[in-house]
Image (cartoon, rainbow, N blue to C red):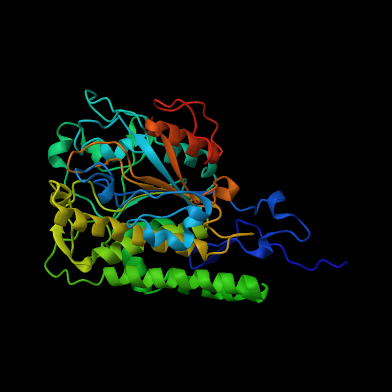
Length: 447
């Protein structure tokens, strides 16, 4: 038998003109006649945490179960998604929903402690002069699976809101981020797509670097085009198709980021940070998902956390026919018309998340797809937004997690099951050996 397959290192990058671009997993990175699971090219777990504020319409309004638009039912062939989660129908075999989960950590804090405690389950020390809480599970996972990546983790948001009043009490540490590297280090969520892009793909991020790049008038792909063509000549047809698709995705993302910087800023005193936040909120939400997908595909990072819309936001949703601001609308006062508008907003965010899930499902990654090798947690740390309560929480897990997640089921847990039990479950399935976290009493079985 003759083995003629060429072997590329998993760390191969395309270089040119002082920049480097990571590559997706290609067949040529796998040594010939070697089982994929026994190589360094074995697909790695990707973990993602996707947060929406203001809860979801569940059974705990005055209308009871008849108005529940979030909770799925059944398992296996009888698993049925709810109206809000319906956009995930094509991939529902990857979806696990949980009933009766509670997080006591942010209780009675209204909005100020809600985002950060979603992934910690630990109430912050509100008397401390600075941030003091606990590491969040995304960062615990990043320490385990992301330590060899260019970026151990990526933290992004679709928007930011002013928290100056809350910052006077120290609460701003907890209201605007999901991620704490350790007990005293909150991580900022970047909402500027250009900054995220250059963080991922190595463009400039200072006035001097931006001036140089503007003078060159060249994209990352233009700089490495020659090397990309040389590499494609050495690849098989399957790998060429994968590489072409990846480079086209990079090109499209570059185009959209560049378009965001072309606004007329005449007479405006520009800050040092690059321009890139899109005025079109829907496009902004999509672009952040695309950047995360590219980061996963190129294995630049394996852990991402995304605040899809800010806590306490006054964002309107005219693009889906809801002109009301999200935060005031969330105080629905049990008005059915307002509740139905909230359902539309919540359904919209799941639609955008579902598009991201679909992109991962269509992206090859070794012997499977990125979705097969991902574990994605989506949901909120609030339940009934009109009451600011935290039970039951709307949360799902999506993905195959390299075979660690069953999917296709709604897990009805005992009443008031602590969110920390889910945290412990997620950690263990990510390979983080933990016996307890927060107020956990044990991992959730059957997931």
